[in-house]
Image 1 (cartoon, rainbow, N blue to C red):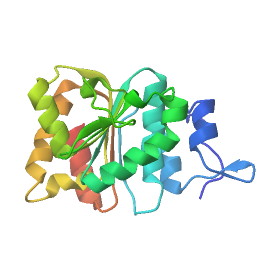
Image 2 (image 1 turned 60 degrees about the vertical axis):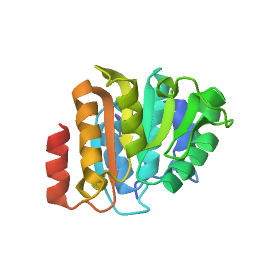
Image 3 (image 1 turned 135 degrees about the horizontal axis):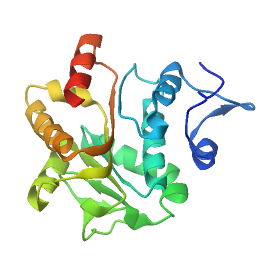
Image 4 (image 1 turned 180 degrees about the vertical axis):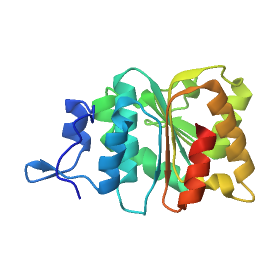
Length: 210
């Protein structure tokens, strides 16, 4: 654990107050959280985080999301399973909607193979324009394919949870196609998260993502 912040963390006071854990009067970060901040996740730098479960990867993602929203940019949070999408959606309603989405339910959208709806349960007219979308990989690929592949996503932050899915024999090809399209469109920031990537695979994936 680290009980301080890197000098160049770049997190706003709002993010520090709402999304960074404190132990007594000191900020308390896991080693990987400290390393992610030091690497620039709060400044919009793209990173790939490979770290065991329960080391705080979701909070690293939330710092990137909140920083992106504060700058008026959109964010897409991609997950592997519908159940995980629902869980993150509920977490974001509690942790991000009040302080970083102006408590606007239409600004937070979930998109899975079952349904597409905002935080009030309404069907959004243009879900891809929502400031924060939580989606399964395949659903998001279908959505951008149907609407036309974007030529530029330089105002969009992409978070890929369990990014090791790209190596799955049955689903990996869709993930590779999606990430290739997004990479070619040029994201603002990319944050990949995994608990199981080994060092070689992580380096290979980081190099491919640029």
